[in-house]
Image (cartoon, rainbow over all chains, first blue to last red; front, side):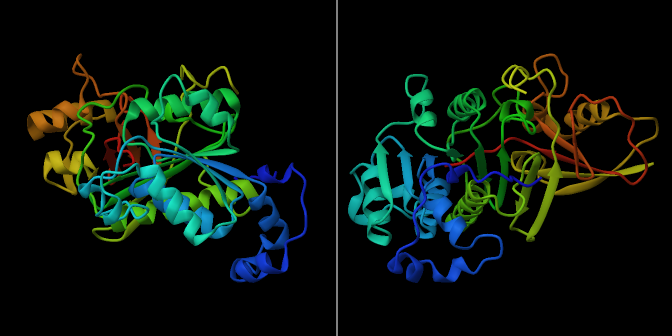
Length: 260
Length: 92
């Protein structure tokens, strides 16, 4: 299913500057994107939570593509054990806030992007405001408690959410758009048994799924291609198998059944 | 009748298998298959696959071919079908 409305296009558009045309020259030629798509992207905002292995790669790719504003939420300081996958962090920043490292790296790469940082994870107290502050959400959180909160808030506010996940050499990606298919709680009605906060993974896996999440966000925001609405990409890098599963809505879902 | 079962994420780690062929002697539903595999593969897989009542956990992701089905689905499996069992994963 295509998203025909350009979500980022409602605000005032102005032509690209000569400098912007030069920076984004390689993507302006993408069929169905062009200068209008670039303007949509520049007028769009994305909440990325968290900005570890997956979210960091997504935020960087969005910044490189020329997103207008990023809202980044991630609590805590950089740890040595983050460095195998969290590409927005640096060895010189161990012990200092992750979001500050992310801000520094993104601004170094594309200073035109407005970046708002929150040294906090998603919780009951901030989820509604954070989701309201952006046009689209990229869920890259490791805890299902955070993911379920984001899901509820995006359903209630009618915001699209790109949901990204990884484990060992496997990755999953889907996009939820309220009213058009299942939500996260349709897939997982409750806390999955046996899920642990720390799991084995390579940085190449998190960077891959983060980049795919950024592409999904760009597609939804700019009305480009066909996002993974009602479909789940399941990638297994052990044998380089990529499958797309068709997902079911749960008609009894406690979160989205009244928002259709 | 034979079906192929593929395991993904923690289900693969718990069973030690990426896939296996299962011989079914009698009509079997998705629900029946998940319960049978839980007996076959021991406690690590059982903890992921079954809820406290011994039924397929509702947060297990199951697909027949490329179509998601509910883990407790009572549709009978057909010869040659591939069932994929995926445990939920997340970011980080």
